[in-house]
Length: 259
Image 1 (cartoon, rainbow, N blue to C red):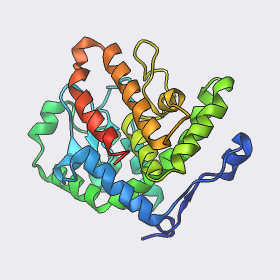
Image 2 (spheres, rainbow, N blue to C red; image 1 turned 30 degrees about the vertical axis):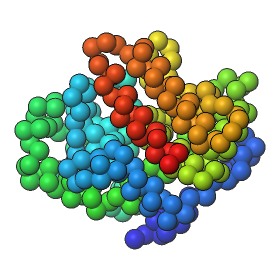
Image 3 (cartoon, rainbow, N blue to C red; image 1 turned 90 degrees about the horizontal axis):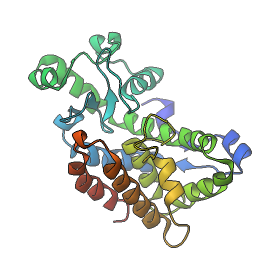
Image 4 (cartoon, one colour; image 1 turned 60 degrees about the vertical axis):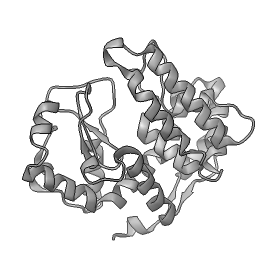
C-alpha cells in the first residue's frame, strides 16, 4: 500500500479560504468501511456485480461504484467516470491489464456483446483487477466528494451558496454523514452538468443540498431530499426509459443512510 492510501483525505485549504468552509477528514477506517458499503449498494458485494450493463442503458457499469464507461462513438446525458478511475489508479502506481491500459473506450459495443462475453478470460481478468483495487476505488470515491463542493458552489446561484455549503457540512459532520455524501455523489453525481437534467431539473448532490431542510437530523433531512429529487427525476424522465422500475431500489439505498 502506498503513502496515499495511508493518509486521511482533507478538503483542500483553498476551498475553506474561498468559501469559509472547515476541513473534512476521512480516516482510513472510514474510507474502507464506506467502500464496502458502496460495493454492497451497487453490486450486492459480489464479484460478478463489479462488471454489469443494465438493461436500457448505453454503457457498462464497472467497479464498486458502477463507474460508467461508454463504447466507441457513444455518449449520453450521464457523466463517464471509469476512465477517470483508471487515470487515478495509474497515478497511484496501479497497473491494469495491458488490454485495459490501451483501451480508449469500452471494448464491448453494446449490452448484448457484453453479456455474451461475461465469462471470457478478458472479463474475468477485469473482475480480478477490480477486486484487487477496491480500497483504491473507495479513495477515488472520496476524492470525488472532496472535489464536489467547489464545483457545486461555482454552479449554484450566489444567493444559494451559503445554504448549500452549510447543508454540506451539516451532513458531513453528522454520524454516517460522510457515507451518505460519498455514496450519493457516486450514485447520482454532483448535479452540475446541464446535460444531467430532465425538464431542466437535476437530481445530483447539488439539487439534494438545495432541497433539504435545515431543521432536524441532517442525515435524515438529506435522505428525504434525495428521495424527493429522485422521485421528481422519474416523473420527468422520458417514458421509454422506464425509470419508474428503478425507484424502489433507489429508495432502499437511501434508507441505508439513516440506519
